[in-house]
Length: 342
Image 1 (cartoon, one colour):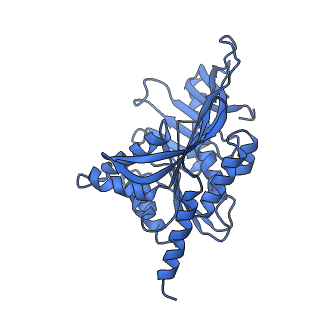
Image 2 (cartoon, helix red, strand yellow):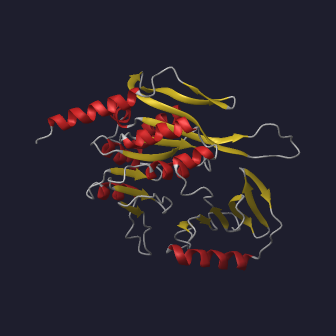
């Protein structure tokens, strides 16, 4: 945990403990007993206020340093407790600092900062451990200081550097099966808290519908989603709201997504070149695509237009005008103010 090069630690069994460096896993020589593994989990869960038992065989919690803990126990797992501790090595970095680390170019960092200032709705996509939460935290920290930000997460991970910010997290049900507070409930409650920006740590299921409705009500927002590309992120966002109920149709969701999302920022781990197979290397977390949603729909598919794409070690600009979306946002804001009562 004290090694700054280690990104994640996971325990498959007491004698099979792994770590990840630069996106590559390696088996350690650490050996524990089954009792030591259980005692370790109990100590880690004391701080997070979460519980783990046969009725709740999974737990997702935060450690004091901000790392994220996930545990699964038998009979969900075969025989041993499975533990994952995900560290956030670049937590708290700004967009400018991330550009200096090579996550993106300075041009993209400046562009995204302006997009946040204009109140654009941004979707951060990527695979596991691709740096979505770190990037989202940097985007939220770029929100103008006069705005009120409400963050909603399953486990507290975001720590934006803002004076007016309220963080909320979900709650598990008690032993009687009562008291659960899901993401959907938190999104609805957040709308009553005068948000200037609504931020959802990650959308996986039906809460995506509540977020889309909130974004279409005029509240700017951001969220992360697991996807393989910017185009796949939008396609997935067209599907997840269908989990909210049988009365939700694809025909209703598609225009909702097309009008709600402005930008998709896709991040991944790019493999370093010039490495041989014997000395395997990981890679660099990098923004590989910034795309805009045009609002056009063809055969049920929402059109996206790439603005910046990472190709062959460098960023290439798309065919569209990346600043057009700012002009549209400003004109929309101006017309809204002219219609409002004085």
